[in-house]
View 1 (cartoon, helix red, strand yellow):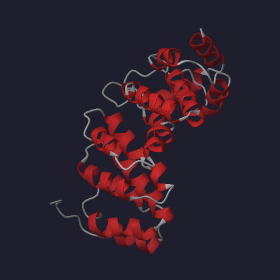
View 2 (view 1 turned 135 degrees about the vertical axis):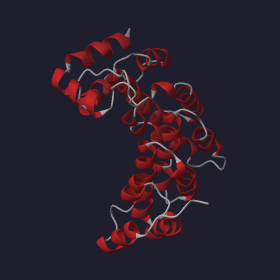
View 3 (view 1 turned 180 degrees about the vertical axis):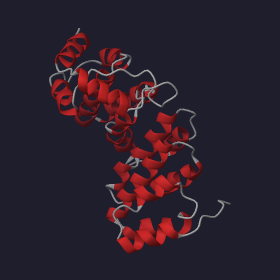
Length: 239
């Protein structure tokens, strides 16, 4: 089976030292967001190299990799899925999106989300008027669904389409998890790189109630004077 071959290939790249570092970096301790995740110690380029050898692996074998306890197996499956989506016709793309959305519980760390969602969910929705899917994901109780909703808007941002990024950022103003603060701030910053007035308009309305991490991420590319302006304003209650 190709899934077994892929796992063996990834294990051959393994590094115990990198695996230990990844376990710390991706917060796998008790009570942390990546609790229980296990690592081989492959780099992303190494994982991409393995993925490139299996471009046509069927979905049932990708599913096997997604359910593997080893992080790099899940990442490899997602990288393959992105490649398949890029080469697919519209009907096949719909099938891939459905498969992806039915396995979001296995897209269960921020790197897995960030390296896959905007290239699948975001690209699928980019030319569609109905993007209610994003808001259903945003309302999910699963942190990874919520991050998928936010980061998927990167595909729209790259097309100078900012509305959903702004709407979701407003929804997530009161979110209690740092990973969502970072994701929202990152997407706002990406929007600001294309149109600074879009970013500053959002900041003018909400900077006093934005979580500090979200704000810091959002203003990273502004001038020192702008950053000081937005960081020094006293906070107010969100109403």
